[in-house]
Structures are given as C-alpha cells and as structure tokens.
Image (cartoon, rainbow, N blue to C red; front, top):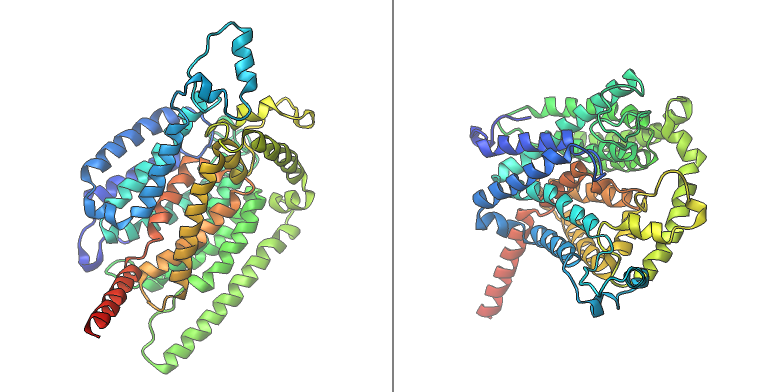
Length: 472
C-alpha cells in the first residue's frame, strides 16, 4: 500500500484511524448471527465511530454522495417504522396477524399497541446491525479524495490475510482454535468469516480489485510494475484459495471476477504506435488468460478431490435444501404481503408456517435468498427501495462503461459495478451482506460507484449547451 498521497502528502491520522477500525470489523464481524460474542465489542465501537464521523464529516463530503447516504438513511427509516407501536385496530388489520390476536384473546390480554414487526427484538437487532456499515460509510465519506482511493489496497491486504488464515485453519484441522466462531464451517478455509460461501464470495470480489489496483498510475508510492506483479501473483493464489473454501457460490462468482479482469485492467498510457500495438497484445493476452483461469478454476476442482466446491456443485444436496426453503418462503411472503413480517423476523415467520418436510433438529435461520427474505420481512417498501438501488446501479454502470474518459475514478466505478454484481448475485443463494464484514465492503464499494469526473463533465456539457441556447 502506498504510504503517501499524490504529491508526497502524508496520509492523515483519520485515514489510519479508519484503517484500524476496518481491521477490527474484519476480525470481529465475520458472522451473520445475532448471538456472537464479538458483537458486544463491535456494535458499541460502531456507535462511537458514527459519533466521531458526524463530528468530522463536512457538508461537502455529504454532497459528494447524496444517493448512497440517502438510500442508507431510508433503509434505517424503514427498519425504524417497523418498530413504531401501532394502535390495536391498525396492527390487527395487517396481513397474517390473526394468530397473535387469538393468543391475546385466549390469554385474556387486553388490546395492546404493537409494532408491525412480529418479533420486535429481531428487528431491533437488524437496526443495530446496520450501524456497523453505516459507521464505515460515514468515516470513508469524511476522508480526503485520495484517501478514499487508497482504501482499495487496504481491502486487498485484508482479503489476503483472510485467505492466509483460511489455509492455516484447514492445516490445523476442524478443532483448530483459528476457527474462532462457535458456529462455523470448520471443514473449510473460511478465514475471517464463519461461512464458506461468504468467504468464497469475498475472495471473488478481490479479482476486479486486483485488476484496477494493477492499473493505477505511479503516484509517488509503489511502482506500477511492482503492483502488477503482486496483483498477478495474488490473483493466481486466489484460485486454489476459493477451491478450498468448498463454496459453490465462490466458484461461480470467482469465475465472474476472473472474466472481469481484462475489461477492468488498463495498460499504461502509450506514447507511440508501437507501444499501443504492444498494449493491445497485452489486453488480448489478459482476455485469454482470464478465460483460461476461469476454466482452470472449474477443471482444477474436477482433478483434485479436495476441491469440495465442485463436489457440492455436482452433488446438488444443498441446492435441493434451498429449494425446499424457497418454496414455502415465497408462500409465507404472500401471506404477509404487502407489509411484510418485519425486518429481521424470518425465523419467527418461517417457524409459524414451516412445512413438515423441512422440520429438523436444527432451525432454518434464513431463506438463503436475501432478495426473497427481503420480500417476506420487508414487504413492498423494501422491494421498492431495492429496485431504486438497482436502477441507480444500472444507470451509473451504463454511464461509466460507455464513457470515453480515462481516469482513476472511472476505473474504480467500473470495478464497483462488477463487485456489486458479485455481491447482489450471491445474495440470491445466500446472505453474505448480513455479515458486518461484507456489509462494510459494500458500503465502501458504493462510494466508489460515483465518479466525480463523469458528473463534472456532464454538468459542463449542460452548461455549454445552456450558453449556446441563450446566445441563439
């Protein structure tokens, strides 16, 4: 990581504070469960971090990211609305609340004011869970422009540490103390996370990050040649790291990440026709190498029996179990439609109407499809919010990918669009963004999604066209 900003300006103390805080989040925020001991440390820290960020953040910082901050605040508002007490006549008229009313009558309880959420303690947990990514988003917003760019190698370094920890975990066996979450996949290389799929998806997001990091121009820090060599070496190492996680989601989205490399990597700016020709050959080689690596990622699993991801992919056992959950989850979602059961209340909503086929000694903690769970618990308002976020992603993605501007901001925005595809796509088969770690990665990535240079160019174009009209 470069120790200085452009122009050899030293990094601020606030930047190093954010790096330390993000490191703590990675160490303590790898599980999506609400009963892990590390939350006792992490959530109070998040509240303190938010308080600090609100003191140091400026109006100019906020103006740079109105959409990202606005959508996040609307999400928090939605969760808060699910906790507001409602008059008996109101909540009793909500969909699928008859059983709660009948229990009150049978127990002789007078009509009570109740919130929309059928399990308010779960919704409170969802509210507190949002504080961690919110704190990171506010802190990164408050940084200098150059420092926000340098968050990229910080995340790459933390990702590398997670991969190394995963190798140490499988080397120590299922009883290794390096598996520090009580409930985790102790037969896989999970690193800082508690779930193999979440680790696999996290590692998959590193491919586009490495492509852009290797493309950065020299700015007084690490040379481009050294960055390229280091990025290439890490990308090669990521392939077996994803395989040993045993994650099918990591396998699929790792291939997507690999295929994005030739589209994200920018060769050094050419000064001669001969150099441009050489750069074109490099780009062609990268395309072939990325496609070959993606193919290798699959073929290697067929050759090496320890590649559990391929065995699970071909076996399809988990896929059948997910389908058994998805079908009743959709039916339950329709019963609570359009208001939902309350953010974070999937366990209680599912248990109430759980089919006999899914009964087991263990309980179903999530729908293993976050978009479906969002519909079930959040109803139409949450779907509308997700649709707005998707439209913002699509609109910005089209603009940055068709843009002719060759800038670092555009490169970061393109990278962010790919990472968001990986995170959103993996949420169809699991719940990675419910972990504080990946939630914070999402928060930072969304900030990279707004290239100021593109918007400045647009404003200048409008200004010029306006002047032309006025002159005519």
